[in-house]
Length: 437
Ligand code: UGA
Image 1 (tube, rainbow, N blue to C red):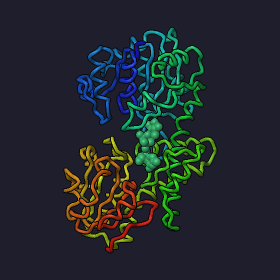
Image 2 (image 1 turned 180 degrees about the vertical axis):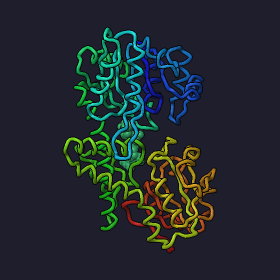
Image 3 (image 1 turned 180 degrees about the horizontal axis):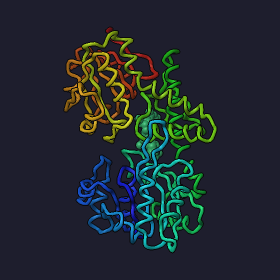
Image 4 (image 1 turned 30 degrees about the vertical axis):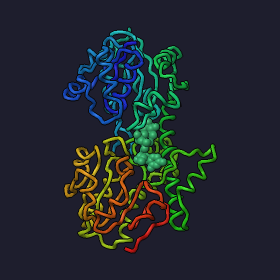
């Protein structure tokens, strides 16, 4: 099948490369000249395990190309995927400008019948809007059908997820178009779930909102655990043994970050509001998450009092491990508050430092190793559970810090382990391990 993919962000690039890997001829379109030049050489503009290997392989085998020209990319495509961004606007709604532009570009470039597949996360009803744009702007001799095919991949394991997902959702109101998109996806060997377009659009939002709800729920339980002296890890493990609850997404910590959960929960609250439904549960999920991101700062103030002139080390800056994505990362409000409180902030991340510079306050000092970051520090905050951070010997904190005081926002160490060292270890939803401060 000849496929064009518009947009080469996380979703578009991974989708294009994966479709090429299962045998389709794919041309990825992006308006950024420089990015297209880099990608044409097989270099990935994003940090994503295994992506570059697959890019190089499929470019070499002539199944994957990149272009800035919508016209040449689209004109021979039988199927066109829209995978552009739908950023959050100040009122929480999704900005559909890039979707509209992609639809117009398709309408102006198509020369024969085609199927448009929407990968971008779009509010319910957006595919109808794309249909209207096609109707109003493309040649009346051309038949275009729209199919919704939301993505469920996680950053940092996007390639793995694409080949090992739990389901592929295909929402189509035209039977044959749905079947064609189903046949494109068959080689992935993942169960396919067919539905109508609006339900497919809603499955995406509801899935992300439910996962965010699970995280905020377990974080609230962790807050109560701290008050009553229970251990959240034992509680979550005990809950997760009930298969109706499931043991995933029950890791308490300093909240969810990343562009997706934040953007999609806000958008769903707006979608509900626009349809005269007050989604109070999801509003609380968002509120809980915002408060949770600040937990380490609160704990530090409780233990240390004033933070002025205290050297604080931040370990891990990206919103989660295995990505350099800084969007909605907990490190941002944490660094901003610490700087406001007069602390000296030293920060480290294995891959996100270049990105982090534009997200964190300019006062933050970036270091090249964990050791440099924690040397002479008065406190260390574990923000992202990178393998390198998790596997650091606790003796290193004891040896290098001015005061061996570790605030772990991701519960990386067992309490038993922490108690073997001469340090004070404060985590989330678990009793503090204290060595006289
Ligand atoms: C999320 C969804 O998991 C994907 O299914 C979806 O396709 C994607 O959004 C999207 O809409 O594009 P992603 O944001 O990449 O994927 O990352 P997750 O692995 O889901 O983690 C999100 C945040 O939740 C991270 O900050 C992580 O640290 C946090 N989290 C996750 C917890 O705090 N506790 C948990 O138990 C799990």
